[in-house]
Image (cartoon, rainbow, N blue to C red; front, top):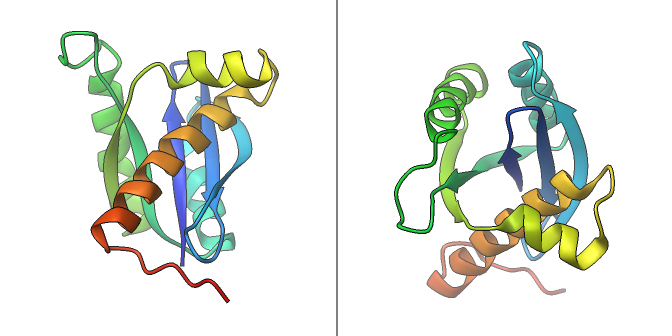
Length: 136
């Protein structure tokens, strides 16, 4: 099963997907944050055989939830209800800025930020032995 990463934004939502072995993360899409968002993510999750969704947890420099975190929590609840998948938070800190620094500000930079969130999660899971990597 693959893992889906999401960088939630007020206007755009970046989507990234892991490979089958959960070893790396690839930018996949940038979706508009509109009324079809949950349905679009549900469709992608089904098409890509996703087992877990990882959602960026947005906090400020003091570690407190950012203003958008309430929207993220609502989005998470809707995802769980609609997809019946495990949805976990992964702390995200300046991932959009890092994605823009690495590749420049492109139309896919939100998806690249989602890939950074997802890669962080995958690395932690691999280090904890939660995800078994299949090399070969």
